[in-house]
Length: 64
Image (cartoon, rainbow, N blue to C red; front, side, top):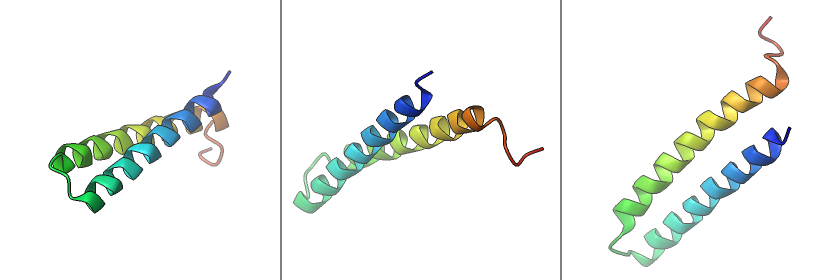
């Protein structure tokens, strides 16, 4: 029932990790490689989840 809200929450989390990685890059911190990996993993998972959920929400409109 709240799939869109869940998707929005996941996207905001991915954006937050991206902002954190950008701040870590700007400050040239030692944990930058770990933060960059976390950001990549989070963004990839969020993209896949959002795409799958949107297909379910819209019922595959345009695929028939």
